Image (cartoon, rainbow, N blue to C red; front, top):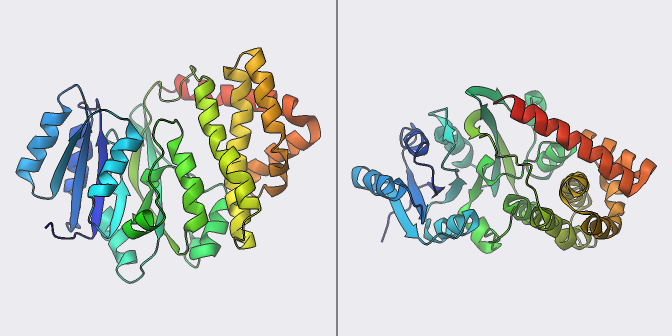
Length: 335
């Protein structure tokens, strides 16, 4: 029987031999050492499987799972089932930690307070340059916990769907069956829709330690109907369910504000990625959820909601498509 570390770090590995050493080394070099590192080789066709095994031979904290390729969600789920740490952290294998005391600072929060989730900050690494995420009013954040924290994050456009920007109590994942849905794009969005409904206790770590590597082509112009349908799945599955639930009112607003952001993104993607017949069908389906505009809490969502209420679904979708296109150009021009 394996000993129970405080943290389980789950790293899905697939075709990242160029980045894997930096990722794994940044974890193994953490000043806090009571963790296990679970490398999930998702049937990678390059040298990654051998690299994973070499790490496990050198460091007893490294555990390796070799499995057939099944995608990011399946690899994360395999790691969840294997993990024995009190807390779970997800790290993508082309990313890394730039702060060696990151785990230590998490432990400082969690050793005295057994929370469901810690929300964390991150850097974006693009073209060799590090850019920190949006600034926080840390003077306010120091006093916020649980519902008040989640409400603040939602109202200020600060709830990021990425699993790697969270530290989650492992039993919280298992109790609420918070596995990742396989075979879909935007799996983190759907996962976060579920998490937000169940979180009872939450905290915030102001450190900026995680480095998200934004590679050229990671935002792609080849978005197709499946991308749109998978993102819309979260809206169709959870919007009405949450609105009609007995969740505390402020939590309900936080959840619906998060979903409304996805709704506005879908409106923009429809124009960019679908043919005329598919576009018309999707706009009809989206019209059923126009009521989400009543639940906008954050600055961006309030603007987007105003546009939809004033001009309607169709014109709103063109406005958002133009915005997404501009952001895409900015992203690609910086490489």
